[in-house]
Length: 225
Ligand SMILES: Nc1ncnc2c1ncn2[C@@H]1O[C@H](COP(=O)(O)OP(=O)(O)OP(=O)(O)O)[C@@H](O)[C@H]1O
Image 1 (cartoon, protein in one colour):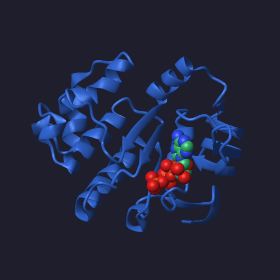
Image 2 (cartoon, rainbow, N blue to C red):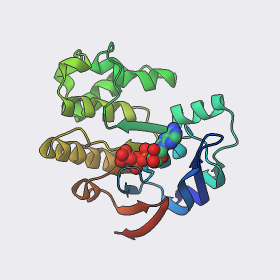
Image 3 (spheres, rainbow, N blue to C red):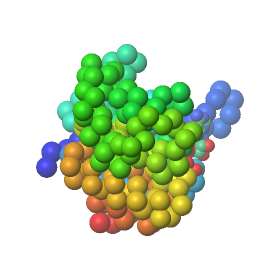
């Protein structure tokens, strides 16, 4: 198994001139294998979203090194980062973040179109896999939370990204719906084998991953398989 993500001494602080600096990520070093599903757990405010945003290249980091495969992640300009994100990454958020004026079909088709692909069949087949083929024409406001998250998962995977970043994907769902969403992620993980980095508060949700990393005071304090 190759290494999908490698960090050495990764650090990030927030602060404004005149205000105390808050160190959110502190000297983090880790490796995540290709196709591995890693879960980041930690209390509210421990830095889970910050870490995911740093991995996505949305937030800059202050110190250390981060590699996506062999690519040093950080020195690129915003345009290059956007292209890498668009081709290589998929995102799932707690609040689904679907485009409200696009149908389920068009939400899923968008990342494929942005990558120059307009393959109606693969969008439909993915909607079928997430159990929503019959609701392809519906808008997000016409779908339940669980259905919206299933659309979001299809959207995150339609362009076959190598890395899926999922920030509290079941945080807004009841227990049973959350389990169904995670079952679906498991199925699609087996099929597409993206590397997954998922944050969660929930130990039940964390069990779906291959490995758990616990974030506390900006550091990983222990990990369990
Ligand atoms: N843009 C920002 N500017 C200043 N401070 C920030 C910013 N974003 C996050 N923080 C601070 O960084 C810390 C970590 O926030 P982050 O959102 O990464 O935590 P989290 O573990 O994802 O929390 P939660 O589980 O509640 O979503 C918090 O104390 C937060 O106040």
